[in-house]
Image (tube, rainbow, N blue to C red; front, side, top):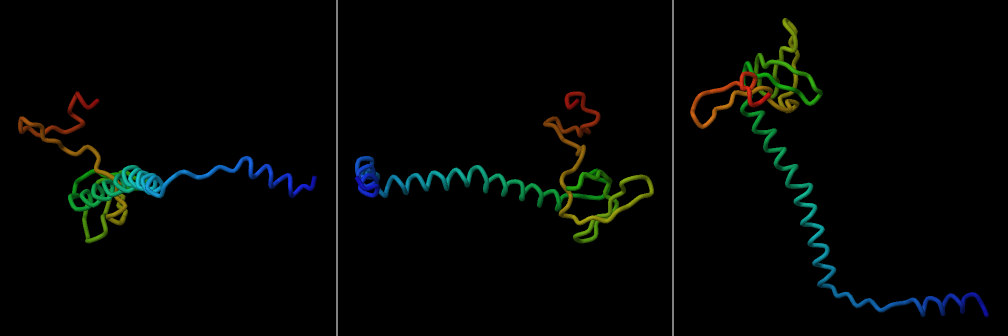
Length: 124
């Protein structure tokens, strides 16, 4: 028996008719798209909004951490530039969008009194 004839018999025996419809495929693709939105795009947008909010609300005297891991106190704001004091008498200039988060912000509980995180025993 020739080899090509054998392969054609095997492929004919194992070949199955595809019974899936276009609607099932479309539904599957929509589910993958929805999962990508909720797992990738939505969290990225949330982080972007938080970052933009921090950049708008930052003020002199705030302790911040940069994307590179440097801690410092904001001494001056100049447009897109922030001057950080990283040690006594040592200032560096960084881009405002390189600020990652504010450290120890003051929080105002429902009672109205302002509490500093460092003084709050529940935080530690």
